[in-house]
Image (cartoon, rainbow, N blue to C red; front, side, top):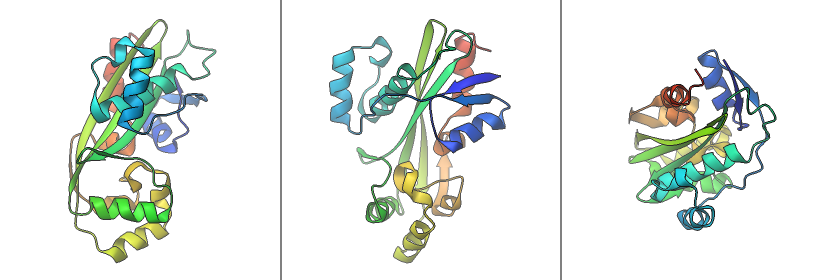
Length: 204
């Protein structure tokens, strides 16, 4: 299975390779929105029918996923489906993106310590003249972390390019007490949802 992937995330590429799909990375020129206010404004500006049912944090990742897909370089758009995704962490109505620096990573992990949060991935697929957007949500519970544990984890460098400042597929798994929902979604791409979308679009 050949697929275009509008993402530079090595984790998304690895997940697709896991199911024997061969992704070819393409560049997207879409500028992501970071806040709900930005997402609401952009939604009203573009008035895209696929975004009409999304609100709150779901809108942020759905809009970013669709924007990345539609803003990608895809000269072979008729031949292969194109996939884009955006993952965010939400807790108490607050959206946690990638940390700006080590201090920001510490604040995020301290905020998540001992609490439940939600990982949401917006996934968009374009194939021929059709497109789909979905949002998949997984609930994650962190165990209570000491400041030393947080500092030691940050020192590894792993949190710095990940939403919520942790990677469940790496050392970050030691921070997690349990999850409800898709594990792949927490890594960055809900494979079952992607598979179902591909079937719906007639790409499989």
